[in-house]
Image (cartoon, rainbow, N blue to C red; front, side, top):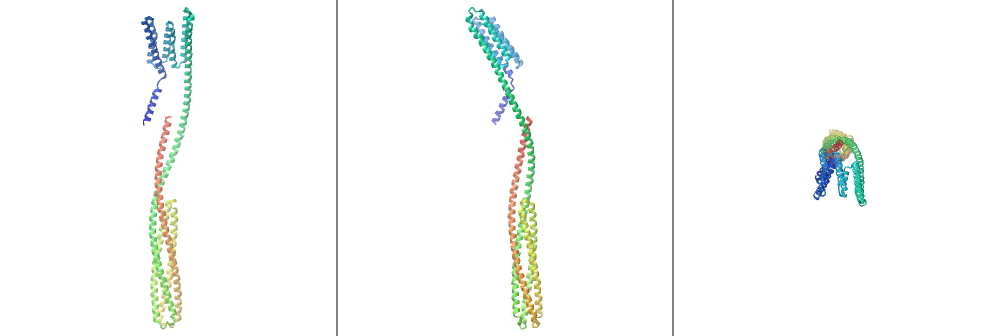
Amino acid sequence: MSENTTTKQDLKELEVLAAQSETAIANKTIIIAHTAICTIMCAAYVLEVFKGARTVGYIALTILFAMGPVAVNWIVYNANKEAEAVLHITALGYGLLYTFLLFTAQNDLVFTYAIPMMIMVTLFNNLKTTYILGIVVSLENIISAAITISKAEDAAAVTATLEIQVLVTIMITIYLIAVSKGTIRFEEIRKARLLLQENKTRDLMDEILSVSARMSETIGTVSTEMERLQTSVDQTVSSMEEVSTGTGESADAVQRQLVKTEEIQTHIGNVEEASKAIYDNVTSANDAVNDGQRNIEQMTKYTEQVDRAGKDVAAVLDVFKETTSKMNTITDLITNVASETSLLSLNASIEAARAGDAGRGFAVVASEISGLASQTTEATDNIVNLINDITSQVGTMITTINELIETGAEESKCAEATAESFRLIAENVDNISEHSSHLSDVVTELAQANKEIVESIQTISSITEEVTAHATETHCASEQNQTIVQDINGMVDLLNEDAMELKARS
């Protein structure tokens, strides 16, 4: 803060100094010097009166020649401080005083009175005045010397002193003329340098203005681009908000899908238990048929036993029929779950599409889930077909056994028919066993597929959480970029204002 204040104060002083007039300063300086010299000379000559060396009239005339021009100079200076007449009045007035004293003085050193005024005249760098004053002073001293030599009784005795007087006067005149010329030359050189510097400064200012104009154009372009970037960042922030929302919804959907898949796994376990029960029942039926074939020869004697065995088989088949009915219920539930899985996979694909590039991996997983759901539906259809075949075959068995019971009284006569019926039963039991084994394999495959679905859903859940985390980070980064863009816009505006102010000052 103090440095800035000092700089402003210095600038103010420089402005005040630059506003001063060189001519006024020179006029005031030479008038003061003229006044001082004349005052000292008048005081010295007044002392001559007390010594009795000079008369009062002579002293009065000397004071008149000395102080008259001084008074006139002060009047002219007060009227116009830059008046050129000040120099002329000083030179003429002091010249008259010097001429009067030179030709009336009794001291050989009076000629030195010209030296102070000749030096003061160089303050104006007026070569013409210096020439005139120097030549006049030199001629006056030559004339004074000639007069003195002509009046002297011993010219040789005074010649050396007068020669020194004339030579000193001429040398001083030559010196002052040389100094004036040098000063004028130096001033011309300084002016030339100032002009060159001014031209360089002007060229530099033109270049600065040109650069400022280009900078203004560039700043305008940058400002436009920054506005576009601001718009893009705003859109990015908005998009990331939508992505964050979408990934959150996707995570919820995945959790719901995981719950449904766990329900599917439970139902698959029930199907496995039912399949095992079917296999056990089929095994029991097969054993019963084998026993019937072994005892076919004793059928007549053991009609009651056959009847009981037929009833036992009918009861087993009723249980088997009820089990197949339960299997139909389970397969319907699996079909419904598979449909919901397909629907959730479709929802996951839609959320992945909304997420854009960030959701491509999510879309692939959703597609795999859809494929697994389709496989589940296909496997369920196969199970339904197998159960329908088993149901149809069980119906055939029931019909056969009923006929066997109804014709139990005629078993003896129908032994061959009974044997054939048992052969058919054996074949049907084998078919049931084969279908039961195939059903077990299908259920195992369904369990494996559902396990893969669970793993895929867990992977989707992890990916969704990661996408959500990245989306949150990207959203925060986008907000930071938005703040940075706003700061840059502010700096560009300030730079543009500085460029416009520089251009206005030119």
